[in-house]
Image (cartoon, rainbow, N blue to C red; front, side, top):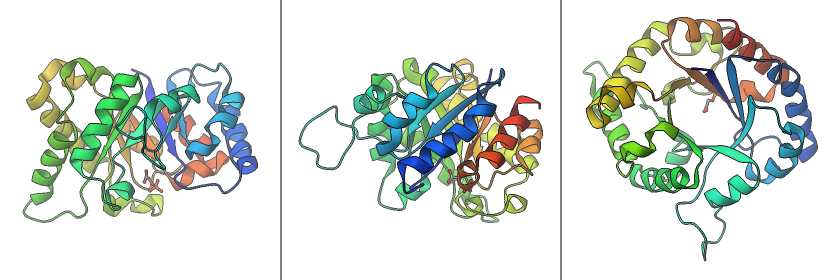
Length: 254
Ligand code: PGA
């Protein structure tokens, strides 16, 4: 399976020109990769411009950071999965902790996931605990978050689902403060176990598990090598083409 490295640009940058500059910087490295799929998730408004830069390169794709659960209609301010597809997006990130902090529940994530999957988008469902407690309550929290976020998803859709494990306490820091590869490995196994309970082992083991939270050039290689994950979800470091390219090369050469 190819490694999947996703850039989550969040609400950045503030101009289309800057968005194009970042993507052009990343593209130089991305198009040379053989074993790594690169997915750039900018704000919706840049998708159309960036689509033109990406062209037909097979291992560089576009995605969105959110989508609505309805197909069309009177939903002011929302963007449908079909619109994302028509603007060149083939991936979507759903249930990011920053969206959950604004009120997005597991139920909403589940509804959005279903519509995105039906539209043919590869859907990255984010999960992650706020804190780690000594009693292990975070494990129960994660189990429920996975089950409820995938509540509406039948096994037949699972091949287009990607799980991004992003412990909230590890987001937005220096790469020295990310979760350790050994702990990430443990969590990857735990997530596979939960998915196996829902969908059976064979289907569950085919779901890519990504890690996100303070990934940078300094830790990407070790996380890929020893973290037992199929890729990375990269936030602030994905806005710096040189740093992001370093992460891509770590995945490619692992
Ligand atoms: P970070 O963000 O890499 O800046 O920690 C990751 C994310 O929130 O997706």
